[in-house]
Image 1 (cartoon, rainbow, N blue to C red):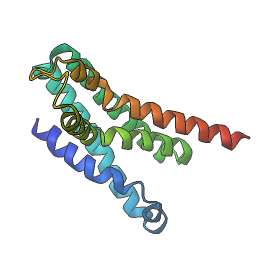
Image 2: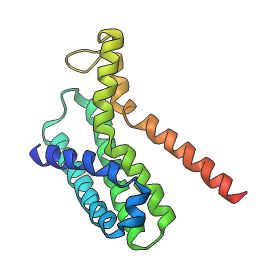
Image 3: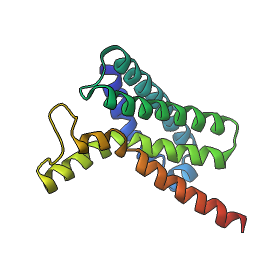
Length: 164
């Protein structure tokens, strides 16, 4: 759990840095170094989380295990693909996978923010201490899949515009 938490913290910090065009343009070496650190942190976070889920499970049981395991798997996949396309110098595919990784990298923060807003707005309606309430069950996937779907829609529209 320590590796997961430490690497995840670094991941949340490093991910936004990669989005700055002036960083990529003016300091490409820094972009590459922080990118490699980001990839390493993403893979470590994903693997440590997946191992923890396999060995101990989550507080929310099977439903949370499944949602968070998918999140970890997608994070690891996005990291590997972003790195693979960067090494191949396929910048467009790298950019698309790096954006997916960004959305997943901030997932932990989104999870906490969405719960905070929900509790402020509803006083915790449909949320239980064992994470089995309706809102909790939604959040097993709701903190990352809707954002990934929105990104995919944006990427699809961009690609379509570029073709025409």
